[in-house]
Length: 565
Length: 63
Image (tube, rainbow over all chains, first blue to last red; front, side, top):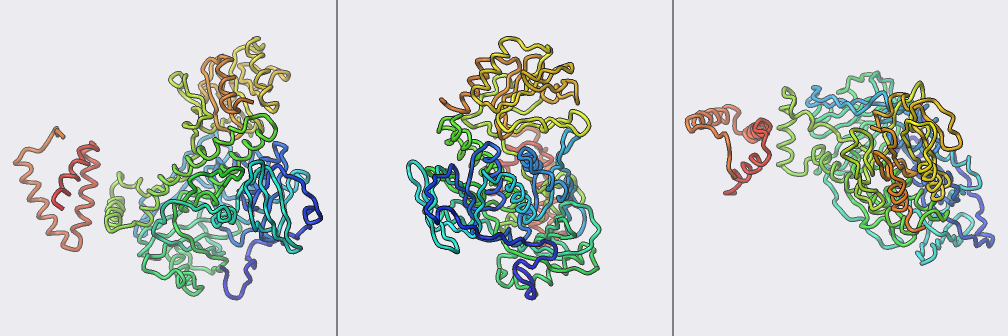
C-alpha cells in the first residue's frame, strides 16, 4: 500500500520498468514442448531460470504482472544466498547496492539488553546478511536473465489459467492480452508465491499452523544516522504493547515493523493515518526528530505452513508456493532461493541424461526438511516475538526483565537468523565414515565453507557449476589410481571441476586446477592431508568426504547422487 | 527421580520465610512475574534439566 496521493508503483526511490507483452509463438500455432516451464518471475523463479540456463537448460518463465514487486518486501539476503548469486555470476550488482551487516541490538523498555553478533571470519568473502529491497533483487535477476536470450524466455502478462499434470509432461493454459494458448513442457516449477495459482489448480493445500500475530511492515525515507544493524524493541516507549523491528535499506529507506495485537482490527491497522501515527511514535523512540516520508506498507501473518510433498508428478513447488514461514530470521526468500537451486540442478542433470529420474525424488525430502527445520527455529522466535498465551507472555517478561541486569537470559532475545540447512539425512548423502578423523571442514550434507586463499581470493571463487572435487595432495604428479578416478568422475559429469590443493605451486592444467595448499592454510580449514577428498554437489553441498580417498568409495558416492545412469 | 544435593530442612525453612516475605513485598500484581523470574534463575543455577523438569511436574501436580 502507498499514501493516498501516490499510485501503486509511485515509489520514492525505485523506477518501475513496465515490461511489454510479447506475442508467444504458441499463439501462432507452435507446439514446442519446452524442457522446463517456471510459473512466477519473482526472485525464486528467476533464480531457478538462471540456474537452469547455467546448465544449458532452456526455460519459459511466466509472469502475470508487467513489472517487479510493488514494494521492498523481502529485504534480508543471507551470505549463503550471496554465495549462490556468485556461483550464478550475478552477485556484482547485489554487492554494489546491498547494505551488509553482522550485528544487531535488542532493547527492552528502551534499554539495550542484547548485542547480536552473527558468525563471521576472515575466511568469508561475504557478510552474514545484506539488506536490499526486493524490487532491486528482481530487477538485477531480470537483467542477468537477459544474458541468456536463447535459454530464458521471460513472458510478462502471461497468467496460468489451468494446469494438467500428465505422465510425460505438463500442459498449461496461459491467458494473455492477445488471447489464450496451450503451453507444453516436460516439467513445471511453481514459483508463483504464497497464493500460488498452480497449487490451487492442482487442488493442494498448505498444512500447518497459523501463528497468532499480524505485523505491519512500513518503509520510510529519512536521513537517519545509524549503522546497518537489526534493531528489535520489546515494550518500547514508541509501541509499549508490541514488538518493533527496525532495519536499514539502501537509498535512505528504513523498514519499520510492528506487531498488531490480537484484539486490534487489521483493517484499521493499515489505514494510512494509523500507520503514520505508529511510525511517528517509533521514530521518536529511536531518536529521529527530523523529516520522514512514508514510502510503502503492507501486512503479514506469522504462519508455519507447507505442502506435504513439494513434488506432484512433474510439478515442483519452490519458494512460498511450497511453504510460508514467519518473517523472523529472514528465511522466506533465502530458503526459496535454496529450493530453486536444488530443483534446478537436479532437473538439469536428469534432462541432460547425466542422472536417473530418481534424483528428482530427493528434492522434496531435502527441501521440506529445510522447511521443517525453519519451523522449529521460527516457531521459537515467533513464540518469543508474539507470545501466544498468558504463560508465554509472563515468561517472556520474566526473561526480558532479568536481561536488564543478568547475562544468562539475554540469548532469549537472539532472533535465530537463518543458517544453511544440512542434507545429512538425505539419501543422496554418503555417510561420514571418516568423520572421526576430520577435525574440521564441512561434513557430508553441509554446504562448503568458504576459505580465504589470498588477497581477494577465496575457495568458492573457484568451484564449478557442476560437481566439484577438492583433492588434497603432497605430490604434484597424480597417482594412476587418482588419475583414473578423476577420469571416471568426468564420465559421470563432464562439467566436473577438480580443485587440487597441493603443497607447492604446480601447473597441472591437464588434470585439474591447482590451488596452493599452503594458501590461507586451507588444509587446516578442511583438515585435508595427502589423499583427502571432498565430493561436492552442484549446489555446494558435500556429497561425501574421505580422509584418504578410495576410488571405489568416491564413485559409489557419485552413483548414490546420480542414480543408475 | 533421585535428587542429589538437596537443602537441609533448616535451610529450606529459611527459604520458606524469604519467599513468603518476597511475595508480600513485590505485591499481588507482580507475584506471578516474580515467581517466573525466580524459577528461571533457579533453573539456570541448578544446571540439571531433568531435575528442573521434575520440579515443574511436582509443582503442577494438584492443578
